[in-house]
Image (cartoon, rainbow, N blue to C red):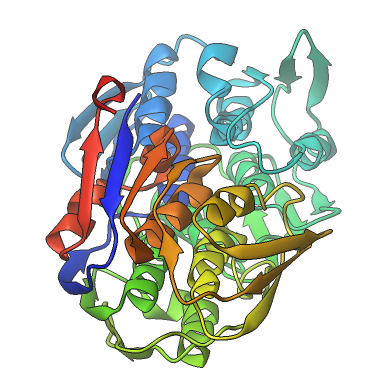
Amino acid sequence: MDKLVIVGGQKLAGEVIVSGAKNAALPILCAGLLSAEPVHLDNVPDLQDVRTTLKLLNQMGVRTEQDGARVQLDASNVNNLVAPYELVKTMRASILVLGPLVARFGEAKVSLPGGCAIGARPVDQHIKGLQAMGAEITIEHGFIEARAKRLKGARIVTDMITVTGTENLLMAAVLADGETVIENAAREPEVGDLANLLVAMGAKIDGIGTDRLMIQGVEKLHGAQHTVIPDRIEAGTFLCAVAAAGGDVVLRNVRPNTLDAVTDKLREAGVTIEEGDDWMRVRMHERARAVNLRTSEYPAFPTDMQAQFMALNTIADGTSQVVENIFENRFMHVQELNRLGAHITIDGKTALIAGVEKLSGAKVMATDLRASASLVIAAMCAEGETLIDRIYHLDRGYDRMEAKLTKLGANVKRIKGNEA
């Protein structure tokens, strides 16, 4: 099992190109199931979750071709409507094949999902929405089985804001008979990116980017070409890395307007940020100031940036509170950050951080995807060497992170398990 060895104390300088968004690419890949014509995608990130999704689509009969960041999907000969546990257990986003399969083929059998252990994240909103559209659903032997001759348009009000739930129901609705209205829809840019692809494929969707999506079902969708949006969480992670380690870095292939909640907090911490249409320059030459934050749904501060910001707060001047409102188990990185010398205590869904002047290198273990990134940031600020184990979590969501950081001057090395 691969590990990262990081020697702290290096400031970051240079340019980094941000990859395509994981959380946009995964539903967009699943949307390829909705048409018998080829779908051509650009800016697809090279991630373990993308490879798992392509493997899942392959075993359903989808032909895929990949050339770097370009992927072509051909779902004209889908012959297997089952998403098995062996693939779904490693990646929660596998549930996103449910809506497209039921919409186009009238049935699906999808294993209950896995992924990071950061909270319950139930799929009941997916099921409730599909049932409202006329699907018959049973759950037995660890599988969700859904059937419908053709889904019917419906008004769906989700009990909570759910990104994957919105995406699944959106993909189901585009081929349903009649109008579907999704109330309380997630507004994340990744949901909008999926909707824009579906429109390019012939779907009729109004309200993109709002919490009310109106979909007029069509008989079938055609092929399309689409470029995946840049990954705002990868961009935010690099912004936090520079804020913590210090330096002067330009980010390319970014959409600054999707990062307002993050950049507002970074500026509060003392970071200098300049923005253009598709670039950002971040500079930090002093110790950060501690900042309080609360996670919430987009456009508020993203839960996927909470761990990285906590790493920054550990070495900031002052004390801070971080309140996690989305996932109940998303403080698992706290114990590992404390192993590096951080002073963090937990009180329910609030983390209390007393900033220290310096961290010290140690052996730590990644517990989930974003926790991995927080440990990388903390390790770059620590004195001496840090060994981060279980970085397969990192590879699920970051495209060659250690190579990008090395190019910026960080002392980061990937080693095989038997080298440690």
